[in-house]
Amino acid sequence: MSYLLRVQLPDVPGSLGRLASAVGMAGGNIDAIEIVSRDGGLAVDDVFLAADGGVMPDSIVSACQQIEGVTVLWISRYAAGTNLFLDLEAVESMTEDPATAANTLVDLVPDVFRVDWGLRIRRTDEGMEVLHRTSAAPSELPQDIEWPEDKVHQLNLGDLIVAGARIGGDEAIVIARRGGPVFLESELARLRHLAALAASISR
Image 1: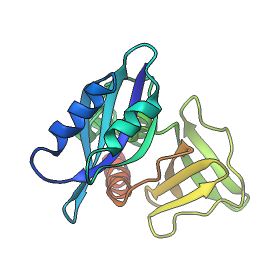
Image 2: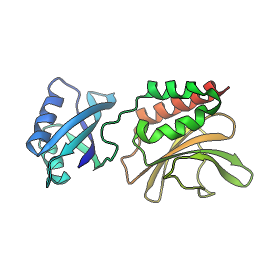
Image 3: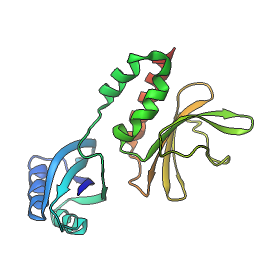
Image 4: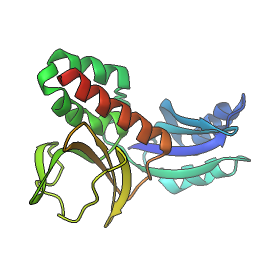
């Protein structure tokens, strides 16, 4: 079984080694690590791991949290395994067909941000119109959903954690995770940056 583990740990030499040892002792095998943010002597990392048969995720969490200074922020099954799709690769894909750059970004956000779905929406007098979506995304949004006036915005919508970034005019990219983890400021900044690039490429 593959899992995504989001963990906060001291940003000092040896931290990742201790984390890897703890995961291994609990029956897990780390496939990849991606740094999500660094701030104030702490790092937040996404750890992609596979667990041996019969190993429960709770045992991996417990092993990690025995390490001084380590906090597990989130763990969930992750069917995509270690298919990391970096921001630069997303930009390269968007430039292949500039006219559809925004839609390409929507298609890529599940891998880029490890979210459940993505949407491209337009604000109209009647509410929010869905222009493009990934297969798991809803075909329409609640009409009272907040529009990202400040260009990037995060809110809770039932059991969904939703973030949005404007791509110019009355259009925006919306991404969502079911249950968590919450979007970090670094992720929101990346979403804003990619949305702005999509708008620029499509011009």
